[in-house]
Length: 73
Image 1 (cartoon, rainbow, N blue to C red):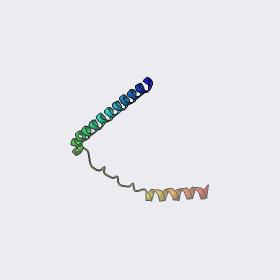
Image 2 (image 1 turned 180 degrees about the vertical axis):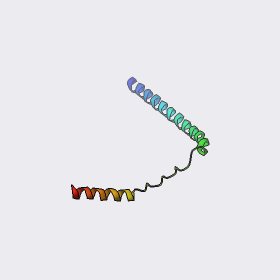
Image 3 (image 1 turned 90 degrees about the vertical axis):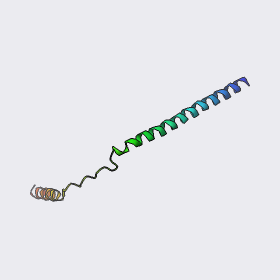
Image 4 (image 1 turned 45 degrees about the vertical axis):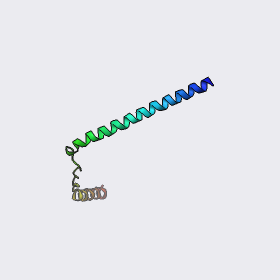
């Protein structure tokens, strides 16, 4: 029975340490979220979208060149 009692004490101590660590982790996360919220105005909300490159004419020229090379080669 003594071993069972020691196991129970060890289990309760381990679970208490984990619960304490997770509680501290939640508090630190909430504090850091509020701190990061202050810098929200510095960073842009959306990244500007790049315009698609106009390659349609270049693609047609490349295709025509490939056809010409294939027919003559």
